Amino acid sequence: MSVEEEYYINLHVGGKFVCDPHVRYLGGEMVRLKEDLNTILYFELCKTVKDKLGFNIVQLIYFHVPGSRTL
Image 1 (cartoon, rainbow, N blue to C red):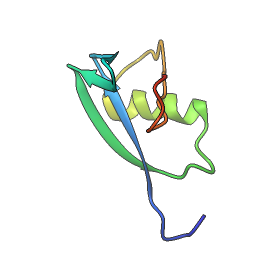
Image 2 (image 1 turned 30 degrees about the horizontal axis):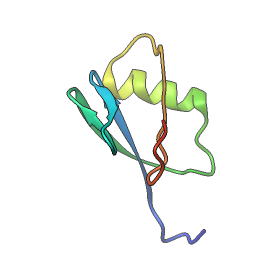
Image 3 (image 1 turned 135 degrees about the vertical axis):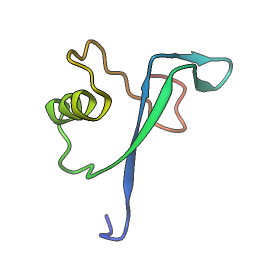
């Protein structure tokens, strides 16, 4: 991985994912955060959701790899 590459995580909140035929997000809001993919951990992601989006409890986290058809 090059040090010049930047990676972002798109957090979707308050809507839902649909697959018809491509995966997309309906409703809610999206927050884009710059992260280091080599060091981000599940617990750090939960803390980011709580701190940046103001949630006290994180119930579910799904992820989608661009280009795949599954969550």
